[in-house]
Length: 126
Image (tube, rainbow, N blue to C red):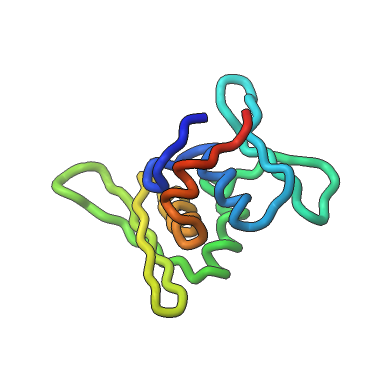
């Protein structure tokens, strides 16, 4: 997988960074048909399973609630709507945008946990 900036993360790669931020074990990107899928093993579970908080509200809700991530929709110069997420911890505030609300929320979560350089220099095995 190519190395990316946080604002470019999407799909399985974004999910893998969220899994890493949550301390999940055995994170990898596996080819599932034509698309890559993040596969993670929870610390308390023996078997790896697909993990996609960037598309699954059930998984994302716990992160959004726990981190108090705020979401809002944006209309920018007549383009289709985008979403912006904000996360504030102590005296630091992070922002991220995405074409979908969960993408924006998970990008801001990753941004609050890792630096751009960490994301740029480290990738996952396919």
